[in-house]
Length: 127
Image (cartoon, rainbow, N blue to C red; front, side, top):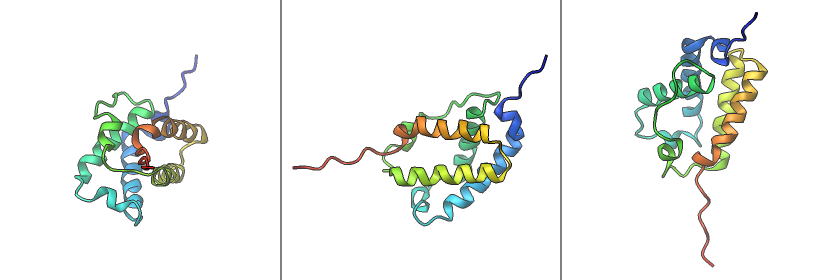
């Protein structure tokens, strides 16, 4: 009987996820449009949360128990365009790390599922 590895195990577990998260934030912070979102942020703490979150998304052994995504991103006014750009960076970094297409599809599906919790509602215009 064969057991299939979780996506977490397929990518190399926590050490591989940490490497991906480190490179992800290098690329995000190198983007002039995205960098302002991270002004004054405790980056080491944010990276730790992102590692745990991504490990959880990939089926790692520990569930994500951090703040709710909507709560964590409230007030940041993240646009759909910027959210898409962050997702593209994550997928690019994962692809560069040799992650399989199956895992990439799972990550993209998850990004699509949580987008409404992270992207700010467009401001209503007064008539």
